[in-house]
Structure formats: structure tokens, C-alpha cells
Image (cartoon, rainbow, N blue to C red; front, side, top):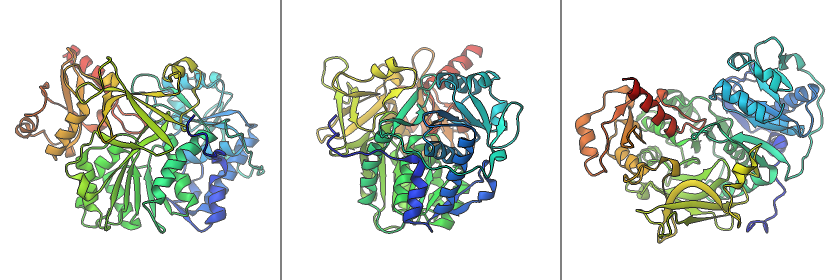
Length: 523
């Protein structure tokens, strides 16, 4: 591939905290929650203490006879110990398989089956919600907290003899995560040390050019997403204090940020949307932010504008990375106060020079354009090596010359910027870009906290809206805001927590459309 000229020895997840502690032993890790597997760890510790905890967990896993190459599924109540258990498994050469706490029990059981008799690390509360069949599909069930008949409590193995770390080959699987599952049962994405290192490089390069000195990095990213691994590596190895959030509640986040004054803030787009109200907090919890970083999807210009305005840094930047679980970040775009007010939210950025490449392929033989979007395809050495147990599905997305089809449609501007218009499966005939329409509605209606346009039972565009504090939608303002947009059905108002979401808080549009159809059918 075009990036093979760059030397890549592969990232070693299992020794991440150990290496960070060797460089910056007094650096700190801050949490907004207690760890199930080690409640005594507290909410503030040195990186050296975190490294010792990873070593301790690794020793307990080794005592259960987990060995290099074994798979360890982690499906437990949300918390940073998901990440620590994954690092501990990698430390002894095992392959962690991270499953979101939000997955339903039958999906978890199916993914455990697909993983081929793994060790399952969970807790009593989660295990009680799983089908009994997981005991038959797992080599052994291990609990981080609580008790359950037939499962082994990891607490009973405290003090197990420590074991040396195991270095696996760079091309060996080192982590398995799952895709968003917006179109059905999630796929299991297999990462190697080499593919994760390839993802680390562009992100580390971008950060080094923006953030100087010792800044506190606050991260609210799904604990089962590969992005958290690279975000931690970039921050810890540079000696940045790291705050990891499990709770995205704006009030809780404001309290923490007002105390810590983070200089870098990384979160999902939907979390940033929820945190818009922090801009009005008199304590100015976002005043110290130099860089806002959003990795998963294009973000609405209104959110960018409000957050940048809340910073008191001289030249804050909002960095948007467009990518996918399977390939990592592919293109990047930066917003400043001067560029954010009327920015086109559909322009997601440019490839990383020498690291990623991108093209747009026609769907109908005509040149891709804003009116006729094409398939977005990319090349990156950060691409996963397979879908576990589904090689044919993986191969179907890779062209003969190595281009990966993202499942998104868009076009490339005359300046080379990639414009993302829609997911291919979400296209509504004759409507244009649903994402662009949603951007326009957000910019005009401050009341909105979410708007998703999905096809109705007859194919008509149906806007589903959520408002701040659940207040009734201002229909007069709605009619004014939609006057210049393609025709839509009347808005359907719902509470945000009621909408189906992925582990990274994306709305599952297809599932939402099915819900609406079912509601209409029963009405």
C-alpha cells in the first residue's frame, strides 16, 4: 500500500501505561467515576499507579489460564475499567474484544458465539441480562463485581503473581471492536498493532502542531471504541494529565471542567451538542480549551460556533476528523472563530498528506457533484484486517486496487475538500442531503438538541426532533426555518434518551424509521 514506506513497528497496548509512567511517573489520571474492578483505586491517581493496576489485572487474567492469542470479550457496566481490562489482556498477549454496555443481550450472545469460545469478562448486573447460552459459548465467565453461579469473581484472584508482559508481532490481532450496528448486528473489526499505529501517526502529528506545553486533556469517548486507545497513547506518552469521563451530563461535565480547566477536549459530536449550554455557564468551564476534537462524524456548525465562542484562548481550534471504525481518521478539517460562523458543515476536510488518501466514485457514470453524490472510498494503513468470521463482507468493501468503500456518499469540491452528504442507506429519493437539511435547521433553531430526518412509511421525509428540556417545539419558528428546504412531513417530537443510539451516541436512523412505521401501524 502507498504508506508502507513509513516504518511502523506496531503499537503495544499492553505496556502503554508502563511506558508513559517511565517517561512521566508523576503525571495524573483523573476519573469522574469509580472502577468496578478496583473501587479502592479512587478518582485521581498517578500514571504509575494506573500502570500497576493494569499489571495486577493482567496477573489475575493469567491466573485464570488466559494465554497469548486467546480472546477476551469485555462486556460490562460502563466505566474506564473496560479500557484497563483490555490493556491488561493485551499485556499478556491475549486479544480483547470490546462490546458496548448498550448492546442487548441477544446481540451480545451472538457476538460471543462469533468470537469462538472466548473468555467473557462482565459483572453480575450485566450477566443477569444475558441469555444463559453465553455460558455454553464462553470458555469461562469472569466477574469484575458481584457474584453469579457458574462465574468466577476476579476479586478472588487479587494478589496473583505478576507475570512479564508479552510482545506480540505487529501484524497479530491486538484489539477487536464492533461497528456501530446502525444497519443490523454489529460486525467485529479486527485491529493489529500495525493498523493502530498507523491511526496514531496522523492524530499525533496534528496534535503536535496545535498544542504546545502541558495541557490537561479531557476525553469523553466510548470505552469500547478504538479511538480511545489512540487518544490515550497520544496524551499519556506526551505527559498530558488526562481526565476520562463516563458521564456526558452537561451539569456534571461543567463541574469537572470548571475545576480542571482542560486545554484539550475530545468527545462525540452528540456530546458536544449537549455541552453547548456550557457556553452560558458563569464559571466559564470551557474558557481554557485550546482544541476541541471530534473524531466520529461531521458536526453541526452551530455547535462549533458556540463552543469556540466559549473559549478564552487567543486562537482556539475545533478539529473535526472524519473516519470510520474500520479505517480510523481519514480526513481533517479545522474551524476557527473566523471560519465557523457560516461554515459548510458538509465539508469534512482533506486527507492527511502522505498518510491517507480519498476518492469519490460515480454511482451512475456521471461525475459526482452536490446534486449527484458518489461513493466515498479511502486508502489508509489504519484499515482493519478483517471482520471476524465474516471475511466475505470485508472483501466486498475493498476494491481490487485497495480502496475501501465507506458506505457514505458525497463529492469533492474544486479545492479538494470532501463533502459528506449522507450515508448511502439513508438516502431519500428526491430530497437531497438530509445531513445538510439538519445542519440548516440547527443553525436556525436554538431550541433543537437533535433533529434526524428519516423516511416515513411511504418514503416521505419525516423530521424527528428533540428540544432543550423537552419543551414543546415552536411550530411557527419551525415553519420559518423549513421554508427554504425541500418539503417534509410534520415534525415528530421525541425525548433524546428515547431514540435508538450506538455506542458513540449516533442515532440509529434505520431503527428509528422502523419505530416510526410501527407506531403509525398501531395508531
